Length: 261
Image (cartoon, rainbow, N blue to C red):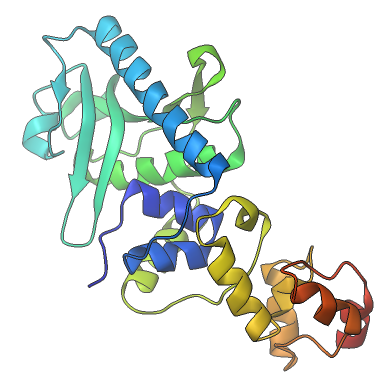
């Protein structure tokens, strides 16, 4: 049975579409030491952020562990912690929703997403994840949030991030995730995330078994798609590649690119 789309699934998609596919199938790998450390760090940061947010907005006035519905949002609580947006295919738990001024179908206020992340400073993956959260929140309140908040690892740094809910890529990505959930698996493409991914060994073995083009380090999804359109979906015979691939390493020579052209 295919799993629901969660915040972890959204983040996995941004890291690797094939990882997203495996997680939607309910599969589990072996977390790397780095990945395990990041999970523990994020858990610790969430606890710290929870205390800070409750102190800022007031514990009595705030709501915790509620499903996000129009009725709940209309209560106008200053803060919703661990707020769950859920339907038959989706189950995304927000670290927090924070009330902000500005008209919506709720009244003269609306909510913005708050994301806690272990990264040292804001980068594009965290910004995009926050934007996807905004897109999911918008229809419930009749307004797309114009900004969100990232709470980062560096001394609990709080950063206000401008969101772009009209960006067509966000809607396309959400649709692609739903397509993957519906049984349209993406191709396996190795990338930089592989070295810390829980599925690294499985995917490496699968790529080597079929001489996948992504074994060539530096060859991205667009370039692989270009070669696939030309009818080249496998690596040519390369003695350097064969020797390295058997040891789980990538070919660093340019011979593969030259022979594919």
